[in-house]
Length: 431
Ligand SMILES: Cc1cc2nc3c(=O)[nH]c(=O)nc-3n(C[C@H](O)[C@H](O)[C@H](O)COP(=O)(O)OP(=O)(O)OC[C@H]3O[C@@H](n4cnc5c(N)ncnc54)[C@H](O)[C@@H]3O)c2cc1C
Image (tube, rainbow, N blue to C red):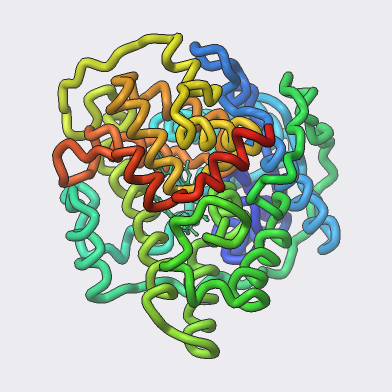
């Protein structure tokens, strides 16, 4: 009997350097590419806003459309379903004599639980469920320590991994395999998902759409066409425009681009153009991204607890009025409000902005950091469960920050990063 493998795409919406897809095409006689829109992702949070808001969801829809178009150009298709993966996947597998489901491995509680339920219901039908590590730069098997003893400080982690940095070569795009005939739902619109239109804003710093091809074009533009990588370390704390930093994060969060693809492109750039502090620093930031994933694997559900992984008791306030003022950019502190308006109107905020608004919410307003993280989860186009929750915990003082009581003094941050108020004026006078 021909071996039929179902590939369950999640946050790995690409064909290049995707081990899940590569192995399925290598081992399967027939391969079913599937994406499932899970309604649980779009339900309202208890604070009233959707778990996944319009900007984030729009980028997802674009990425799924792009994946389907790409698959069609190579002679197959993407089956799209709206429903609970635990039911949808078992049904497709039973109807199509699927022997295996291949998918990316998960690190965080909700995703692990859903994966486990899918695996369990497939096991009852003798269908194998296999996962692959597709999101990190470093394969967990190549770490110099077990996850259980991962250092709690990034610097210790970084120095240990940099002593012998092993980055697997990206997987090539495999030869595609035939697809059995299966009905697909149509890709939902924002309206179908109960979300308002994501109105474009000319001040938005994200200038590319979702999908692998657009992400690769952004990488080409940032590294080669505009030659921006060589000054990344000097520009990365910027606030205005597309080019102060790479803006790879939305593509990375949905896996339209892999961290390893970026790594090897940086290595090529270092050979062809220049290797300096800036080229190193982009890899350094990708190590931060990896680190937070491994921290999530080590601490499990604790990353979502009010006391965080440090188990630090803090009296967080739950003042909805103050929170709403912060969320909508109406605190009266111009730099904070400008950043919050940018997030509200475009679904993005710079790293400098994120640190300041997170510090302001948790240290100046003493509001529960998890409320801030939940708003970012809804709004950020580049929302990533590990990067978001662990960066929030870090700034709130309950995460991996070795420094006690880190505090961002907004006035001195403005003097340093927005001395002429260009950024604040851009968002507060033009909106
Ligand atoms: C409170 C808070 C919440 C955050 N939430 C997210 C989130 O949900 N998703 C997300 O991708 N990043 C998050 N970040 C990290 C960082 O702000 C963004 O990755 C960065 O601003 C994205 O822009 P860029 O791609 O131009 O970054 P660049 O400066 O060009 O960096 C390149 C890549 O390195 C990674 N990176 C950079 N800084 C960090 C960091 N501090 N932590 C983890 N990875 C990093 C990202 O993948 C980024 O795309 C958060 C930071 C803070 C302080």
